[in-house]
Amino acid sequence: MLQASPKGLFSNDYEIQRDGVRVALLDPSARRERGEVEIEGKTYELEREGWLGDFRLLDEMKHPLVTATKPLALRSRFEVSYGERRYVLEKASFWRSGFAVRERIPGGTASGKDVRTVGSIEKAGIFTRRAVLDLPEDWPLPVQIFVFWLVVVIWTREKAAASG
Image (cartoon, rainbow, N blue to C red):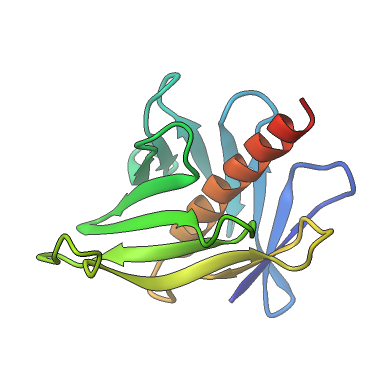
């Protein structure tokens, strides 16, 4: 399990730790929906293609590792594609700021039984920006940080909307 903490009181940067050891530094851009993440000396880019395009994590060679589509602009939901697998990242409930990660099961039915919950991202408390990332262990660290960045994008949008 990973823990994310803002680097400072007014900072948008997050330090990501596992068992108290820093494993990554997430640096979301203050402009638009972009950023960088540094993991083990490698820098990955976080970007959104155009104004309404997909969100992507790019490796050092600018190859996309994972993508996310936001099918409805006004919903806190992403469809994430990683390899051959498909996931849904969405608010766990209307009343909480936490998110659930659900995997789409190939050949599932339309009755809602085509997904299963495989992870979550929750704030560590009511009045904090610290977060706990409980994501699949078989995901590479860059993919886990990318999914957390998507949540940070939503939290930033919600904060901006609340402040008018």
